[in-house]
Image (tube, rainbow, N blue to C red; front, side, top):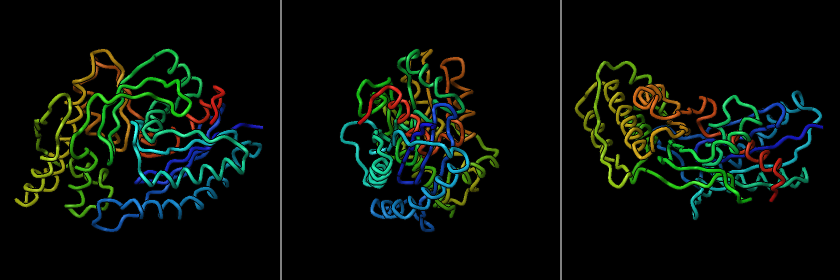
Length: 330
């Protein structure tokens, strides 16, 4: 009988499930982007909750079909779920309650414990996991101690110092090192894309446009006490669009600004430290290239693999199994 952990993540962008075992890693995963109407910049929380409730039964059925083939002799030993956006006290978004309800039902039917994490915990774990084995993550937590982690998405633009937590209710203790005080990098990308008529979320298509541009932009990012303000970038790209500048150049400007924002935040990290990059924005080839150009050799850089960087339940499932292996159950 193979012990598996089920991970559930219901962010404001994606409904996601994962089945994970210590021996085989990710056995099966399912995810579905939440539907967003044309020209919209996302969903209201009430609409996101409804979309998750509609998607979860379908995804559970699809996951179960895969498990019948890949792990017929299985036992759900633990269920992990993202219950809040970030690890900071008071963090809350209603969309995560959809996942908590599903996790409670799944755990009860399997007579298994539920372990709750933050969405941020899941991003960090998925980024560290990549294609590595279960024991490698355990070794990382024991050997390396603290590290720094970027969480760059539509909802978060934050650099944190992270260390494995000793508390049963989470996995990483994090403290904010630097953050955007207004909009996020993901919001800039999506707002620019929607302004151009690109369907939300806009990152992939906007980056393709940026790669067609021959222009280079050196964007200065306002920074005070280690934190940044980037809402002014929106005023600039809106003016570029109004002035009929080529869309590819506007896109190039936006990705140059995002890259400058991340590099400005990284100045708060002491030399030689390990920095993890996770969140949907870090899927950007342009961003990764510029980070490596400027920071390689100065820091140990870890980029979440493409499939692991955007919202998913992989990290949540991994953390649930790690908690279970440590004998820490809710």
